[in-house]
Image (tube, rainbow over all chains, first blue to last red; front, side):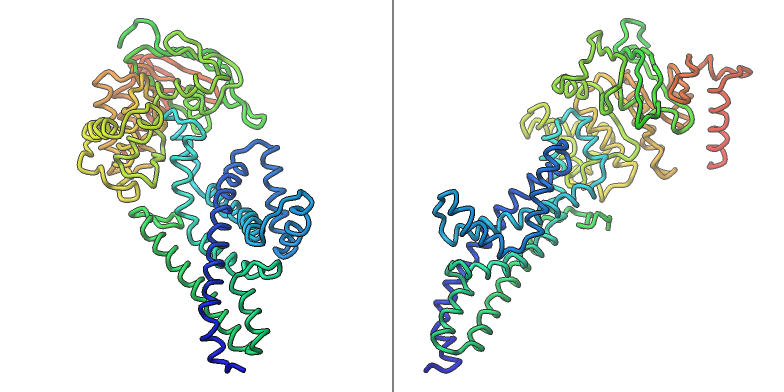
Length: 227
Length: 254
């Protein structure tokens, strides 16, 4: 039987392959969530009553139901019912994407509401349409502002992605459990998995902080105060 | 002042907000090259009137004729065109915080007028030169003083080649020592024959520039006439009383 140490060393390449799958799930989910979040936040702020009602229902549902329930609901329920043969990877990406989309919609919505109204008015006064003003004036500013909250969301979704193991997506958690159940080195292997998750979180958050600094508007900080 | 056909005719504009009548059948005409000044107590409807003229606030009723063409409030395209022709300067500047002084000007040229990047930059530089900020093009709003921000805002408006410029208390948010540079720019525009409607309480702008003063109170124009007539010594008018009080305040400040 392998020792605690050799079990980790021997399975490390296998676990790291799982890390790439985790990164792929989180990357895809965050991108989907970003697309949904931007569109939904604009709809929530500038849309008509019907649009706002539908979007806030979506936000409430995905914020109010546990991810694992949504995962089962979509993977075993909805996708089967609709005769869609999505893989575990695809399913978890869609569910996490829609979940983070709901949270990102709220992040961006808050940022839009925090912007001084006058800039939108000024853009309109120059002859820009609402959609031009949103694209050229509002979004570039609120996306910058949202990076800290977005990096928070990244770390949450990264950890939620571990739930993918319950439907069998071969990511870090699933692989760790597989090796641990064979080698009986649960303690060391789950420590190894924890360390991998920690570094993925840390690396992503640092990268986003760099991005925030890079995109910072001179003389202007993300909280809107002037320095 | 050119007494030919009015460039802008405002007829019976009415606007209510939440049941409050803000504008009560306001009418006036503006000739090309004329400068009209709106004065009166706060809450009298000056800002709302200006925002109704370029339809940032759509009037509830009434008509607006720009160069004898009636504006169709229901056509978005027509409103975009109207706003390109009627520039607007705001009290709190409303520069785009994420863009440099230069790009604050180029963005509308590129997005609205579809001018290519290098031509837009050329035009923006000319306008920045005009307001004395040729050396500040790469600075962001947060790096500019209030007076500089307002001058960039004026340059941004002028780059669109407006036929009329509306100014909503352009110096009210400025520190006293920064007012002069903005007044100088506005006076230079007046000297070039720019058609303007300005809400202001800056006495030097009122007495120095106005062809005509409109005194607004409770959503109506209650007094209207050439500056010389309304401010003539011995004349009893609300306008003269109001201006005298403004003068006292500005004398105290100096």
